[in-house]
Length: 252
Image (cartoon, rainbow, N blue to C red):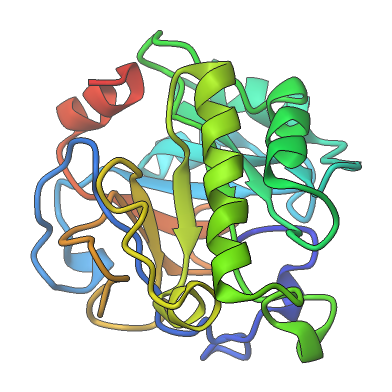
């Protein structure tokens, strides 16, 4: 994810993300397993954080961007100082945009972090231009010895459930879950608890396909296929048509 500490996430280009998976629980159609660069006609997008600072979303749209996710918060104390500029800038450029939260599950409860997120940009409305809130949950970038933040698989699953329930209570939408298959297996025990009603976001870089998905998901909503490219931040593709992306944004 294009977050403030993105340089701490390994990738094959010096920062290889472990094979990851995200899924399509709401809308979308199966995307042929091919490099994202070959996904002709599929909506392209990007995700950004304060790492990108001021972003020229008009230029990004000219290069083919149709959507963007913007980091809003981290834990229950951090706010992206560029959030309003980036979030509003994406909308002014005509992009369908949404906000994401970077989880630190050892710092506070899922409910507390969800409430903080929604208060500081993680809201949603059915205007056709706002993507549902997203939860970015992955290996601990601050302590390699506590990759799962010191939580058991059961506690991690309960934390995600608490976050999701609060986001739904406050916004009416279940969050998109951004993760990797490796993390999901390691830290949740490959839980199937969220596959029925949570869209998921696959993050697998420098690979010809999205790869193996977490248990329960047969498809994905977004594929983050690289951390550099023509668009600012990370490169993504939506698993469906532009019309379906708009439907997804409205909650259909």
